[in-house]
Length: 437
Picture 1: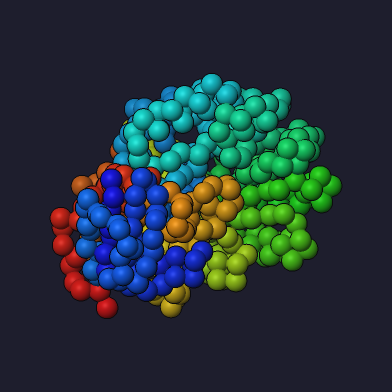
Picture 2 (picture 1 turned 90 degrees about the horizontal axis):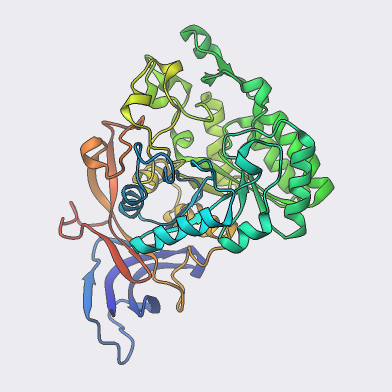
C-alpha cells in the first residue's frame, strides 16, 4: 500500500535531517523524504497520515529484549512482547540466547525468526549462544548459527569461568568477523549479590555486587581483544570505573562498542527504597557518581547505545522479598520516553537520542535499519512529544508489568509504528494532547 506521512517533524541523524517533511512509502519502502507539501510526481497515496505535531523517527533498534520464547511462555509470549515493542516504537530488536532450550542450534534460530516473521511486526535479530547450553565449556558452531540468522554471540548472564574457552571463542569469532556480546561480570566476585556493594546495601542488609566484578572482567576482555583482534560489544555497563576503562580502550583503538540499560541512565541504588523488588536489576543500580558517569559517557560517545534490557517477570517471581525476587523489569514501551526525559532535562538535542536508540545500535548489529533513507525498508515510528501519561499495568501492553517506574508520569508517547510499510501499531485516533512547540 502507498502511504504518505504528511507534515511531521522528521528527525534522522543518518541523513542529517531535522525539519517538517513528508515521507512517501510504497511497496514497504521509503520512496521519498521531501519538504512538507512537495509530494513526489506521480505518487498517489492510498492512505495519508497527518503527522502534524508529531515526530517521525526511524524505528528504534533495541540491543537487549527478552521475548521469553521458547520455554518461558508463562511469563510472556513472543506475540505479547513484539506487540509491546511496536507500542514502544521498537521495530528491530536483539533477543539474548538464554531461552529454554538455549539458542545454540540453527533450527531453533530459524524457528524463532519464522514465528516472528509470521506476526509481521517487529523484526527479531537473535543472539546465538557462545557456548553449548550456555554451560561455558564447549563452543557452538558460530558460523552455522550466523547463516541461520544470528547477528552476534552471547552468554547472556551465564559466566564462562574458564578463560581459555572465552579466548577460543574470541579467536573463532575473529576468524569469521563476528561480534561477541559480553556483559562484564567476574562471577566469583558477584555470586550471591543482589545490590550494589555500597553503604546503602550495607544499611539494608543486602549482599553486594562490587564494581570490581565489572572492571576485572573488562580488563580480561581487553587483553584478549589485544591478542585476538576480536570485535566485542559490552552489554549494560553500570559503573563510573567501567565507563572510564571503555573510554581508554576506545582511545587505544580496540574494536569495541558499548550499551547501557535505560534504567541505569535514571536510577541509583537509593531507588531500591524500602526493598522494592521492581528495582532488583542485573547489573544492580549503582551510586549517583556511577549514573553521572554513564550520562557523561553517552554525551562524549564512550557509550554507543541505550537499550531497554526488557526482562518481563511474572508476579510469582517478582512479588517476593528483594533478595529472593527475580531480577528484571519491563522496558520496551518506556525506552524512548525515558531517554527523552533525561535528554530534555540535560538539554540534549533529539537527534542524539535517535543516534543512541536507532542509528548506532543498527550499525552495531549491521542491520539495514536506523535511518529513513530512500530505498530502505519503511521501519519508522510516529511520536507525540507532548502526550502525557502515567506508567502502570493498565498502560503497558507487555505481559511483564513490573518496572521501577510504575506510577511515574511520562511526557511523550509513540502513536504509531510501521515495519516494512505495514502499520503494526496505530494509536493515532487519540489526538495529541497539545500542539507541538
